Image (cartoon, rainbow, N blue to C red):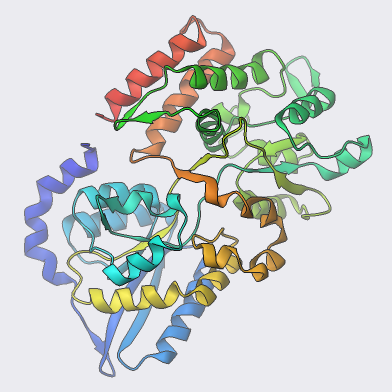
Length: 429
């Protein structure tokens, strides 16, 4: 696959040969210094510092020095460093989606064989997908990034109405029918809001897999299938026919930062399928308390096959031209020890990428809202080796067009055919 970033890599590759020496091994008190870069996130940064301090105190040969950059600047700094080979770090925490380009561009150091062998026996499938090239891996996971399998529910409203939490798709639809309150185009209560990019995309793809279908065949999208048509038609009907919600979460009609989680925080939504990371948003932005103002319950599989899609989340990688790569991987191996990784996942409210950590009852004891997800992680499937932003934007465009009935597509089948062609063309598959 060709990507813009890869073209840029080819253009300036010669520059990297000249400037590769800029990553120099320096020392403090005779120890090898490993420069670690991450992005600003208070909880994450505190956790990283604690693990780094623990590692440094245990070492006589290596010292890790962390630097955290504002998120809006971080991706550009990593790209400049890894592509141009300029001044940079020896170890990066990167988003899995970026890893696809860095792997393809040859910018990363392979994970040592002993470390990857251990992870392959203990990690869930999706968490390594973006960093795989054949049988070689170029990054290791910090988390299991999840956008399917859990649902926020408005606990006070369920209690007021005396409605038990739904456990099947039919029950979810019945609750949404019973609880949706509309006045014209205004919603007093959205029975089920699901149209934000992440939720819409992972719900649609997971519905295909759960029916026993496939959307990724021979390294191309295949969406002209009965499973895909039923999935998309169902999601369109929830807006057009059932009117459980509208497309505000997809279009940003009420603001770019507004989606189902915000609607629930404002007491304007009954059920919202979402990843567990939004739970902190309800606390920080709306003062909502888990177990009092909302619960997080299981969002069931659509069909008979237990399967759902997941992207590769935050991961650690080492640049190919680091002179202290061995020392960097030594720290990574320390970080990945189950006792250290579990504390990081707990502090950062992340799902564990390792089965050995997920199986530890201490994890759920400290993060009880994760419980609905723990027994489905094994069914996660890597979403695929493509730019997921391109997928999400194009799916949203098609979906909104169908919901608004603007005439661009005469049917769901026609829309899927156009979407399949557009994705395979734009991603040059």
